[in-house]
Amino acid sequence: MKKTSLHLQTLILSTILGLVETFPAFITIIEYFIKSKFKKFDGIPTYDFYVINK
Amino acid sequence: MDNIILIILLTFWFSTIPVSALTLIRFLRNRKVFVEKDLKRVYNDPKIIFQITTRSATQTKVVQRGINSIKQSANIIDFANYLISIVTDDENDIYTIKDQKCEVVVVTKDFATYAVKKGRALQYAVEHRRKKNQNTSKFWIFHMDDESFVTEQTILSLLKYIRNGKGIAAEGPIFYPLKFEKANPITAIAESIRPFSCYDCVSQMTNPPPIHMHGSNLLVRSDVEDKVEWKFGPTLAEDQLFGYKIYEKYGSHSLGWHGGVLLEQPPLGFKDHFMQRRRWIIGTLQNISNFPFWQKFKILFKLSSYFMGFVSGVFSIILYFQSITPKLLTIFSSIDITHIDSYNLLQNIFSTILPSISLDSISNVSNQVVVTGPTNLGIISIFLIFPYAMWIISYQIGLFFNIRLTT
Image 1 (cartoon, rainbow over the protein chains, first blue to last red):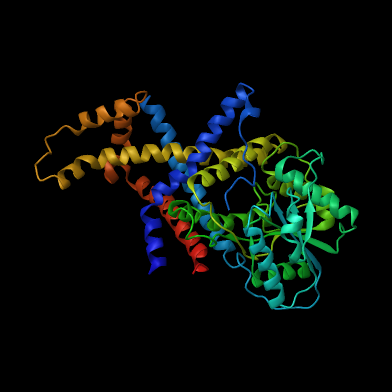
Image 2: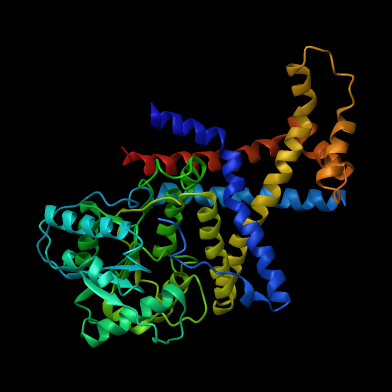
């Protein structure tokens, strides 16, 4: 029942999930090119593999 | 302006059709090898080093869960020829996991190499093994993240791949059932896309050069890692370059797919989700100059799809709501409001939210693309259903894999 509910939620939220998935790419690519252009890339906090809370 | 928006939207919308077709083909083609099923215990064990690369096992408790999963799974299938190596930046880990019978390799603070962050730690581990004469063809390294969880199926698949001798580096699928319940519900189900995208990983690995490769669930022969190394300079996506360099050095038959499943966990919140994706994008952009033209083109196409996915998603939602707002207002109001000029209502909203984009342009696009409906769009509308259906199916299949092992 719970699993079915999750499948339904995913179906209903598919559009939102698409935005959630692609938003980081949208922001990051803009940020990267703006900061690269002004040679401020060093200032971007890079957040490497250990930043994610586990 | 109208035409430009229309062209951009149509270009992206229709570019998803061949991409979706390719996705479907890869799904159908790779479904039988995606998860290795034909497994039996054959006692010709090579030495496998399970390497967990972490900043700190002391602060990241899930590392111990990963260690236990290796021991338990190996014990069940009676596999003893292995070593667990914890590569860490935290010297306290020596005491934290002293009872676990693991090798703890602390990356010293003064260690300098042409790599940063995780790449630096991975390079340290290579050099550490070099000193111990473990960088030979008799040793295989299985790379794991700190939250990775190994099952019997994982180890049996690794052993089978090594036994078959068809390659020197391989990957398998990663599913995300761990801490599924504790994660933010949206980011947990958003992770459904990743197991499905691993069908593409099969094609990337079996038809190299790969345009991406994940750094965990990566099996590589120790001498190969020794030759390729991790000295790729300032990049956050060292795994992507590593895959390409193996192909470059050892040819197209060097890479493969072992089909062993590794279990991991989704990002627990929106910030983690965002930062994780952000790291992939920055890393890929940092790497782009290292690839030849055709590889660069494929990667840039993928990045632009990612980028345009958001843009077209936002515009699609706007167009959709613009087309259904009058109907919704009619349905949800007891008053007959069909005479209300919804156009003016939306005009006010858009002038507030998106002052730089006139509603006229969106409206014109809308009239050309959506509002006129299937009569004018004809067969084109039907074609656009296909990528959307693939999008939905990919999430459903990915979710199936992710929650199959949750309790």
